[in-house]
Length: 412
Ligand SMILES: [Zn+2]
Ligand SMILES: [Zn+2]
Image (cartoon, rainbow, N blue to C red; front, side, top):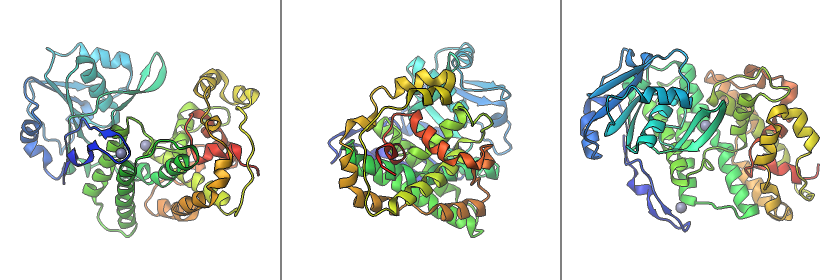
């Protein structure tokens, strides 16, 4: 499948003009055999530096594309840290005209960050499709000990050779499935936020996220039925989801309340010290617990609301410890204070209809079990009794209007 991204750009009914830096996305078996042609098609010529790590360089299925310089980083201990990326940049023989990165999340950040610093384009050759970050323009790197998501350039092209991707271990593939199925919740969150607060919403971008979700839901169903994995469709779903982030310059369509469970696992606040898990696994479990809570509330035919109150300071300090000041800063202009809480009541029936499109927690659990995916808090090192704390604490982490966060305005 060759995805011409020009169909997503231009003037849109939402009032914005959508742009994409990524011109070409290829997800095909043997895609790397035509790599030079794709580079020519995108006008990417000149000195080419190709970056691998020792794992991706030595993959048995790897096709080593032509390079003017190759850099092979030691995979052991490699992480997205500013100092490490800058070290790598000192190994550049000269300023390249284009950087090509062969790998997954961590290595992509090396390419994304260095290309940005040098003001040159970069091209991604994914070796896994375990997340939707390839086509995004967000970089998650550690700066001065703190993990930061910072806007960064997107790749000019993503050339995904399915011969390589299909060799990935099953648990990584499944984690990628969960990262996309999380959109059951994130799309609902976006629609509900738009309804009650008038937050910007684009139907076209929402449709892209929905298409990624529907495509991946079919892949998961096939997996459950014992059919061969459809790597082309899975890669397509990941790429499409990443493009929504690039268009919006924001992860709104791809990340809602369920993704904050992954942030919770990374931050390890009080009670979650032993939490662990891959990104997709965490958001998969997050999707289940959000689905359960959203459906529980949506059973109510009517609701009462209460006025906004900021987070309780003592509670935040107790839970987040050293990280508490960061939470206060994040929540300074709380999104919950930005609209009249009665809007939730006013739109309650529409909210219930939106939630009705989310599968039940039982259905999701059964599906995840059947495809060998993680499906419970205990598998993430979190006690099952912490379910409600997980919802409350994760909602406080980021100032984003999710239905989970909106619960603070609903009387129970
Ligand atoms: Zn739009
Ligand atoms: Zn994700």
